[in-house]
Length: 195
Image (cartoon, rainbow, N blue to C red):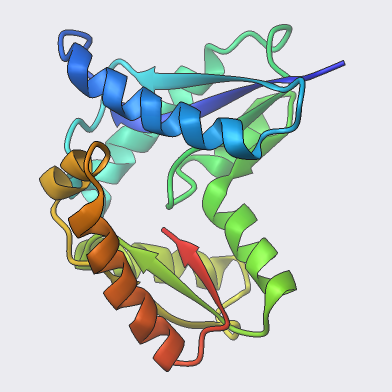
């Protein structure tokens, strides 16, 4: 028997922007279908309130409010309908709080990716989209007790607008990611984690 997972995206999407929703869900759903176990159902949930521009993720003051919105949205999930929750954010927004509040497993994609990386190689590097979020990811890595395994968090130097456009046409985003990945490898990373 398969399970049903709620994937919580940390973005508030305006329901009027249908094209954006189609692009985002198309990319997320397509990628999730590649890695999920057969029989597992995945339901993506976008917040009704919160960030609509990923450029805000670099600021703790805005993250505090956005994390609250994500937390509240996750609390509204029906525990009879879902077997677990995945926080689809490189900062693992509200991860600890939701693990305390929900009566089901809660997984953060950054924590899961970092722990997997430690099984695949001795040192890892993280590639993220903006220099402003590098300190947030570095602090999270240290909080997880993995600071000695991380060589560096590098940025592809992409704006929020470029990242959103890259969901439809990823050429330039891939180039920026590749350049940052090469820097991590030069720093000694054996495994790369997207953040």
